Length: 309
Image (cartoon, rainbow, N blue to C red):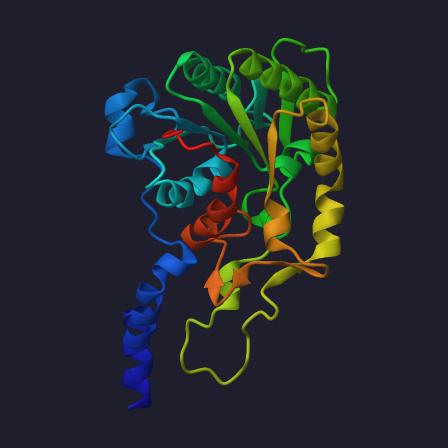
């Protein structure tokens, strides 16, 4: 009997009730997401179909655009849900591993850049689109300044080891200066087009697998679930201090730009939480789950002027 049970478990990659638990909690964990691209965006903006995250909530003209990298994309589902009744139409055009600024190259050492051209095309399209009133700019901020991942990402994604440069100023080699110069130039350009800008200060990279906070095995002899399901705030602050100081230094010169402080929604005095009210807010060590997207969007939407106004 014991031998049969072992063989059955091996052949089926676990017992049946374990698969039922994982399936039932897939949305909470953020597995099986399908919002990276959709038909609305492909039909309305075919030029961005194969290069970018391309998702649009409705077939109407877009009023809000999320621009940035995969962090921009992970905000999309929550913002779509929250803006259903406001008359807004959310569009996400973003490129993985790219800042939401004009003329910034971002690439792995030894690779070729794809960020500058693709992000420039997105921003040019959006700045000239009269229906798009609000730009939400977000990205995995601290990773671009260090050029490296954080926590388990140092091993799982090769640590990044990225290069950041300005195509218009190849003489600038300091990543902080590249970031600041491009951020200022992009904000100035969008404001000149009378666009509303919301700058998202990036949420914490938790540095661990959030699924370790949930026991996917109903029968277990040892307690292995991560508690608390959180990153010490002091670790987050050490990682993000230079990024945060740089962003706030730039934004004080642009008082009309609204600031969404994502860490303020997820951190208390001691911890930055990956789980709240038994719901996982992350799907991996730095991307939001669908539930996390909803959680932040409830506060982010307060900074958006509804299109019906």
